[in-house]
Image 1 (cartoon, rainbow, N blue to C red):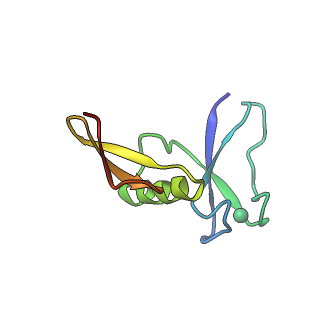
Image 2 (tube, helix red, strand yellow):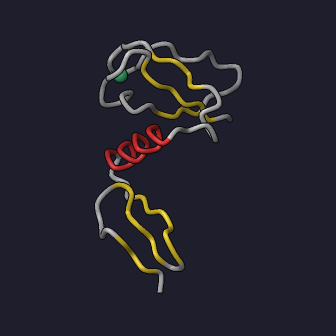
Length: 94
Ligand SMILES: [Zn+2]
């Protein structure tokens, strides 16, 4: 099943839709038009993968943190920098 990304038509939206969210849907499923939490209008973000702007990337990390996940990115050999969530700012893979 393809993974679709949705975002509010008129930000800020609610806790669910404010940063956008992803939804697994069958190809035959109709796209959502309203957030199931706040009822606000949402739209499917087409081609989001690989076309994410810097700003959207930051929002994504906030979304990650709000869900209780911690995200790291690799900044060097065996070295990772935290980009979202709780935990040490950097971790070393050594
Ligand atoms: Zn909403």
